[in-house]
Length: 133
Figure 1: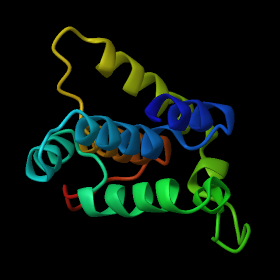
Figure 2: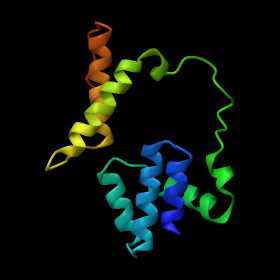
Figure 3: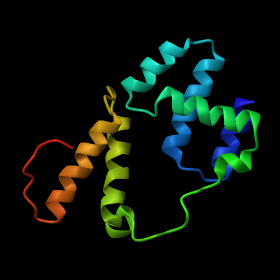
């Protein structure tokens, strides 16, 4: 079952990060880890909340895969951040690869957010007033 779901993720080129969190959730629950243990793990890696993972797993398993992959955002309304800063997206992907390749990977979503935030201000020659994300 899990291998079929993962192959569908890859075949349909779903957003890898959110799919990876869902795959991790499904795998850990299948292996018998408790809800709280999985929640703690997902939180520690900066992942999607366990409630969101459970909701999407329920849709995926009990409903239709096509419903799972539907994008109900109503189409493109304007340029996204990635459209405006394609080089920054590439840098962010390279950053994630470097950080995850380290022997002691301490990478979280917050680390990536800080990297993107810092590079955004550098690219636009802006001075950040508040150091929060």
